[in-house]
Amino acid sequence: MSGVLRMPRMGETMEEGKLLAWLVEPGQPFKRGDPLLEVETDKTAVEFPALGDGILVESLVELGVMVEVGVPIAQIDVGDGPDWTGSDDDEAEEKVEVTKLTADAALEVVSAPTATAPTATAPVQRVDGEKLRATPLARRAARKAGIELGRIVGSGRRGRIEHLDVIAATRSAPIGLQTGHGIAWLEKGIGSGMPIVLLHGFAADHSAWSGLQSQLARAGHRTFAVDLPAHGAADAQANVPAELCDPVIRMVEDQIGWVPVHIVAHSMGAIAAVAIAKARPTASITLIAPAGVGRTIDTNFLDELANPRSVDTVARTLDRMTRGPNGISDAAHEAIFKTLKEGRLAGLARSLAGASGQGVDIRKELADLAKEVPVSMLLGHRDQIVSWSEALDISPFINTHHFANVGHMPHWEALPEVLPIIDRKFQT
Image (cartoon, rainbow, N blue to C red):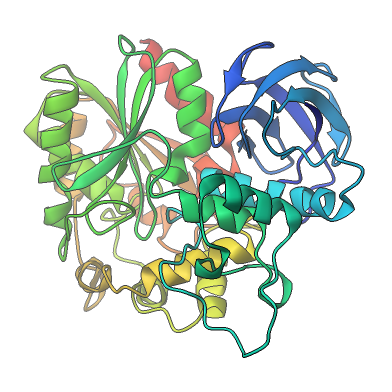
């Protein structure tokens, strides 16, 4: 059976997007959750995952062309399975649902600071006589997966179960995620490529690197986006920043060996990056909005994510990471709140925030490393979490790149500018 895939909406304000690349070839089969296409919005470049199995029959638009949301972009052969593309004219409700799903599904994979969408393991308590509400597409997907609808929490209006909820319930971990040494990591790229280790910031996980990691992998590099201890799918706990490092060092030794690696780290990840660089051969260090290089830090940001009070407070806290909208959906905010509510980050938050500012100082270690290893820093001048200006006087050996209208997340907010800065280093 053939379906028509339409330009997905990757955020509430997105009206059009540029089709940058198909991540599968015409005639090539793919599975649900596989990266399907790459779209450039007015904010960044993101991957859109397949919402079901299929085969790409043909693209209906040229690469590089701006396409309005909802315009057909490809013919998809969905086989005997459900038409997840939403092109079934007899089921208008499914078409509306798929249009809504495109934003949440893409953001779940691309930009959510914590890992997965909400799932349910216990039956849903419903009012006596209340009918279980689910869209037709969700019911078909649940039947195919052998899942009881009553065990899924619906994220739709008045608790309606939607297709994304079924997808979340069938996914125990992101596709391709590996685990070991108490942590988790997603590897992308060519096995013989330049090894690059990506370390996220506080309250994030490997998915925060999705856009940059995909671009680096496409350029021929071998990339490892890590879930640090106490984050994402990592089993290991960390109550102080020093406990973030050893599991990553062991993972790198197992997966890469003693070959020098490039390290790219964001915010809190800079602390782990320095420790790793001191412990093993390192080709370069790139720090994005690093913690540990100044005194100022937004302690409320740490406290609200370590001890979240509500979904709304988490949403307002995450808003401070970027200068403009961060694109995180309501469903993702709820998932993040549920994850943070587990309280795994309380110890780290206390360690990162000292009595008079930041509780960790890596300035001297970083200055010493810069004499032996190429070190770069990327600083957003609208950063509300740490002060960019406090990172300027560490060492003249550090290359510093400034982003005047960017906040704490340059690799989200200015990916087209960040990518060549980082990739250029790997070409030398």
